[in-house]
Length: 176
Image (tube, rainbow, N blue to C red; front, side, top):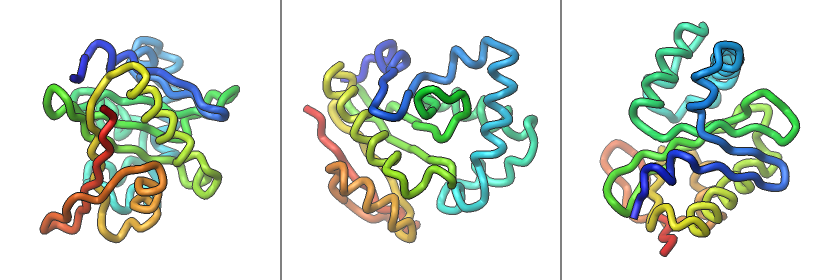
């Protein structure tokens, strides 16, 4: 069962990464400004290529703030940072869909690709959700053309369940 208060305060570390809810950053003007700058830098055309339109064309801090407020209003949004560094290298999005299931989204900055951060991030997320009994099932949708993301989900144990007409393949991971 999803416990919103627990999910909201989900935080975990891995060998190289720290993942925390973005909301405390929103209360600090200086931190929020840094976050908005990180969002502009992170959401490059390559990173958002397979993502919905509202991820595209984030070119200013004003654009980033609109995107950030949308994400926070629709999901639990978590920043991904390398331990000991301040800049955000990625995001995790958890959308609650019912009392036992959440939809997962994630992205990493292009300079962080091919370094094992994606699998480390997802293994850490799965372990934290399992250990804290936050949820029973995670579902991730991947554009059929996004082979790297599909392989990453399979690597950490997600199983493809179905493809819908718009070219998205859904993967499930059962935690219970």
